[in-house]
Image (cartoon, rainbow, N blue to C red):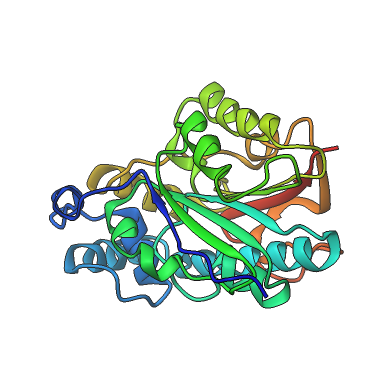
Length: 278
């Protein structure tokens, strides 16, 4: 058994700088998501906004939970069936139960995970993420999804980028409005990873069948931060261009299963997919 590694956070952020970046006067998506998932890392302003959004879209909490279940199903499949042992999780969000490293290392203790987020409250809770089995490694990076070079440079300190990596992007490309830039960022990271790497991605959708979702997003974009962009399912599927989709393809997150989609379950407004780079 290897010696337990010392976790690293890079680049380092001074505590006083971190506190100055936390805005408790405006609701924030990571904290509201944490609230919907039953977490405690949120403020009155987040709970008030979360409750208002839930009034507009009563099923919002369910698609937050569906996204979490999708993460667990995808990670378990990649570890158990594919043999992936390295994960680059960008847009981590606040830690809750069944984080990527917990799911992966429960099956393969030697798994290595790098978390990336630029939310100061997430960084403040980095110690909750920076845990690992003695055999594996977990690290955290304070960076924006658009900072591809920084992400790859620091991820290489923990991950072997010559071997397959699973890139996890759950509900994060929604914060890049420009279509070309959003797809380009995903493509640049995947281009830097070797064959056998996988993309796990989820995205809020817009659909005529779910008008209450559009109302909730409009409320959020007026009152909260950061602003988010909805896309139709076909646009979400475009993030997987050049890759080979596995399982049922791009579907409602609560329907995703590596073997077959559960069509009997009602769709939620969070779609996701998993694909491999050949």
